[in-house]
Image (cartoon, rainbow, N blue to C red; front, side):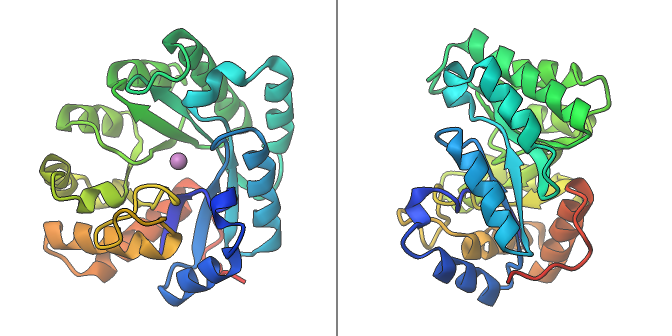
Length: 261
Ligand code: NI
């Protein structure tokens, strides 16, 4: 399995990162996309460094919409350079968050447009954070002019938004939220998303799935996401795991067989 979205470069994992990677490998999670731009700019460099050290780890570079207000032109230039690193497989995370609105909406939108531009320029897919901003996010992605690929990470919007993003050619990634008791609407969507358009992720250290809810999340737990998807779709977990892995390898253009080392 591939955890397509985790932040194991952050300090939450400084004490036991190697053990976390071992538990992931034991759970059959052999490839991780370590997503940068979680908290501050240094999480991008840390993601790339970690990917350099481990064969099955890849990095992305971007900045969370929460922190859009703190990114200046010089920072963007640094990220543009970092994006050329051979183990960087996507731009992000980036996007819009109108729920928390930690940065003004206008500033989030400008930053998102800049990262979409960088994704087009580098020909890398984009990892999109979208919360209560479906219409604006879709508009911005359309601005990529059909040359843009990517994933709506931790998808939690409604069925209409799911259809819109699928029509734009995007993948939808399901996180531990799909295991939550009150996520019936999301599980309904997960039943019909085309098998060749779905991805699985943890968003570790956040959003630990049931039965680990409330604890620090980690990549090994992506198995609970796959199990829930399999249950609601009435298929074997192997079918979900192999489809999601194939999709991730296609989107992020990963080598066919990587093993965490
Ligand atoms: Ni994230």
